[in-house]
Length: 199
Image (cartoon, rainbow, N blue to C red; front, side, top):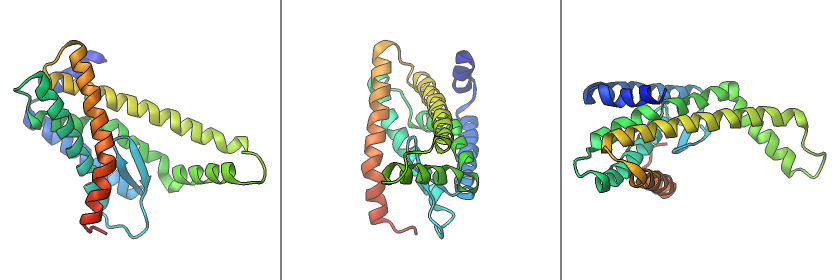
């Protein structure tokens, strides 16, 4: 499995990777829009409010992809001056494929309904949290964690290939790039939407 992941980035041409990555991104956008989800971070989703234009989940996703790509690209330059931005872009586009499957949990609004139910029970002054409402949340959380781990591993494999890095330096700079990307998005997305009107 590990070797196959590396083969994905090593054997496909840059153009083919970009084509596949764009198809995956369009799939992620359609999944999000049809199932009422917005991507609000590297591994975070939120409900899509009623009346939100169809293109907003795509803009969300593209901003996340571009920000993460630049973060990893800058870290890759510390490893190899020949690291290319297009390679990091392809890595991020392709690696997000597993994470898009999170949307399937929100068929008929199931995921966010369950989250709201548990939150109300936890904050209510009435009866204790009911067991039957915990299991869907636990199951969804476990699967989401698994999908995030697979996405993370794809990102690492792609970063490794694109930067041609080795050893501890590779791992440290990869983690730094991901952390910078996640923290930066927390500031960048609100700033973007406060200056650009899409709704």
